[in-house]
Image (cartoon, rainbow, N blue to C red; front, side, top):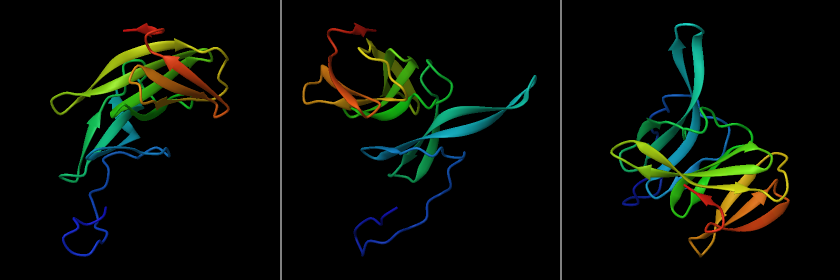
Length: 161
């Protein structure tokens, strides 16, 4: 992490994350970085069970907090993606080649709460991944399907929750 700017800029060590971070690009929002991580929990039937969580690193106090994934999925699959959308943490869940659910994080008291923003039926099937990109109009997003096709999506025309 860069220094505070009062002296010369220099790197300083921070605490280690509490769980292994997955090899994905972190999301940066004002004051925080977000990663997907793997948390091991004890399960009486299966011994050890790995579940995905979201780690939030505060640049104000150099601490990590652990938060749940949206209720749509317990793990970040290869077809799902985290990004920033309209200044909020966004989780793009693609349960089938033709369907995308967009979840937005709301900051509660020390915990992220998820709300389903919309579901979109894609005009073509995705092979791997759908990325969501914001536009200047808050009711419009762009969906990039497999980094090959770009679709403009009016959120008034899709199923809102």
